[in-house]
Image (tube, rainbow, N blue to C red; front, top):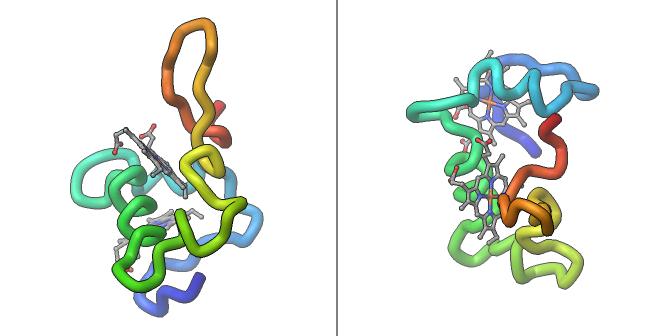
Length: 72
Ligand code: HEC
Ligand code: HEC
């Protein structure tokens, strides 16, 4: 990942650390990550068979909730 305009973050940041700025609004994490990984001509969801929605999401089979793997 190389975003020269991004504020500095630690390489060992946790999901929660990113949410400090990416919780809601224009920078909401879901849309930002989906767009970043789903660019025309460079679609990470199909360019590698191991990458798909479940790289980040898992479905809780009891509640049916579509959650994020790294979230606590
Ligand atoms: C201090 C606030 C802050 C923190 C913490 C932060 N971000 Fe950001 N992030 C921003 C801002 C502001 C932008 C929009 C500016 C830009 O595009 O570079 C952004 C944009 C992004 C983008 C979109 C870049 C693009 O051009 O498409 C990604 C991806 C991203 N952040 C990932 C992360 C990740 C992963 C973390 C945790 C490791 C993180 N951010 C933590 C403020 C933050
Ligand atoms: C790179 C990680 C990543 C991948 C891959 C990913 N998501 Fe997400 N998604 C997220 C994050 C982070 C959120 C925000 C969760 C939150 O706010 O608690 C999110 C949120 C969502 C939401 C809730 C609405 C929203 O946009 O916030 C839906 C629906 C969703 N994702 C669907 C998908 C589907 C369908 C795919 C596969 C095509 C996918 N996601 C792939 C990280 C990802």
